[in-house]
Length: 337
Image 1 (cartoon, helix red, strand yellow):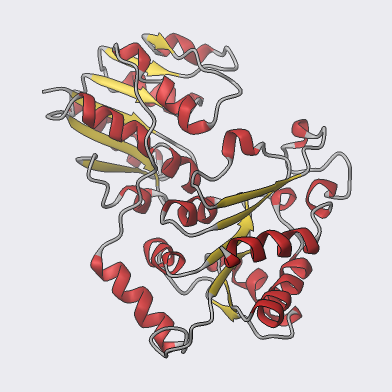
Image 2: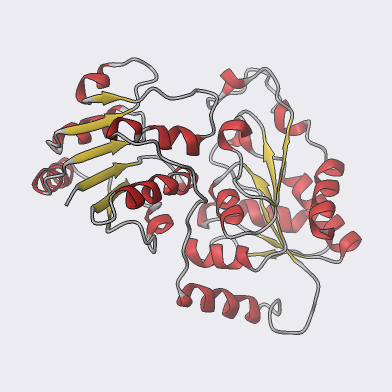
């Protein structure tokens, strides 16, 4: 029975976008033991995934903890490691496992390529889902694409309905649609301005009769509160009030999601919620939401190289060029459908 490890040391959305890899491996090796290694904070994306036997959580702890984790990897005797990260740390972990087959990316042609037994030759213009799947070709088969997988438990579903009920947004007979706005982003230059989210909240509430929620994690609560404070129609601030999977269950009950390029955007699309995705420096051809009911707004400026903590244009123009009018028009079109 093959013993396979898949490493993805990235963020929420990246981990979720990798789920077709696990599905392809399970279909190819139905009796295999398939493990995933992901960073702390992303493990819930795979918690109930039926294609995975075990999720290993990688901490950024002390040197002693790191050594203990590496020893544990070595003692698991993996037959194959598929590293989807394209990073030095994950390449070292791949080598430490001692697996006879180690597959990984090396787009930058760095020294880490020496730690793999096979280097992935990927298509740079492909979506991340397809690029991750290309990492399975060295295993001797052509993987097929499949939908993303994000499973929720009955407890997650019940907790979401309980929270919405406490807020008077569920089970009241009110037929007005719930709309989730997600103003947060990992990098400031990927975020649409908070005041425009507030303006959008008012137009959704007053023009379309929507009940607007503002989501985010605990670190984004102040940002969500800023959006709520600037809006006249008093949207509900949910930032920091749910776990990831309960948030996904709330998204599942929304008629629309509007947000930046972030993990919750992919979560919403995966659970079937219509999505209006706002993109700036990242390319939606590579990172766009997967789903039939999605609209991407992207200006495609010549600033791909600005993907770092300072914007060379000095004015966040890639996001500021997105008007409230066009976001509202896209939202209305999806809601009317």
